[in-house]
Image 1 (cartoon, one colour):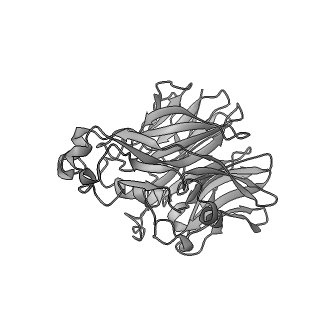
Image 2 (tube, rainbow, N blue to C red; image 1 turned 90 degrees about the vertical axis):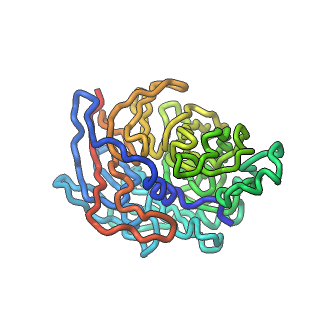
Image 3 (cartoon, one colour; image 1 turned 120 degrees about the vertical axis):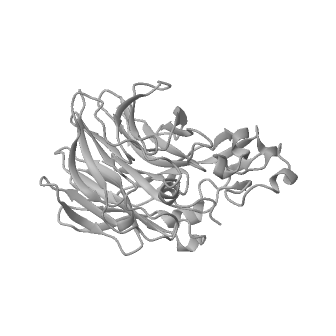
Length: 381
């Protein structure tokens, strides 16, 4: 049984209750430049050494190259109903992820692959990520929900979703990828894990399972939803609920460690506050450290050459800048629904209006055009 909706579908549904961020505003000396617009749910982004920009239109199942004239060229089109995301470029090869079936309640229906496409357009399937999830379920021993200090009688009034107490279920939604030295590191938003893939053999292993994200349920959450609460029973106020740690992006830092953004696997609304986080993972040992927290909906991460970390806060309506672990971030750029960010050669690239074209919930069709998604670029001093 699935314990959460597909990550991006949850975000799209949450967008109905979270106020939209501000229109794009320049917070640097250099105004952002729009490279392309009219995209549907542009949730992943990659920029190679020649500053060639690749973007995914996730729900359309499409991988595009952005042309200099503001048009796009389709490099890959998935089958209808499939999601394409998590793009990375290395040594002339483009790596990307595609998946289907997450959140539909049937583990056998899950499909997810790491693929590559070369400069001639030839596509290779490298690894079957959904099959690995069905066989190993990396977070299967991890406990989520309330602990034993909350009685069954109290939880009789808890809503059906998310469950009051459970272990990690079989779920896979490969969402982001980073590549280095013959290895791909896949952030699987369904598995709550970072997977390591050998690019030659396709062998998969679990590098790290992210730890649960505990949250103390505030008294305000007991208010009805129409009053800004969640309508949960009063007896859970002050009790801790361990939410799932949904990974949304993975990047390799100048120190060689992986940096991973994580959404809280529950309501993404003001009722529970800013609960997103950034983890650091040692790619040689799997050691995992909390690097920063209290971030609203962190969905994308980029690291500059000097180690500064830029994070897309999807519902915060801005891109944040961190200089170090535990640092209070500054606002780098105010922008509506930033979803993905990438750094290359002194520029920060970002997708904007990232949920334009996303369905309103699981099984819902994408809305009709016009789509508002964009890719922008801003110079960093």
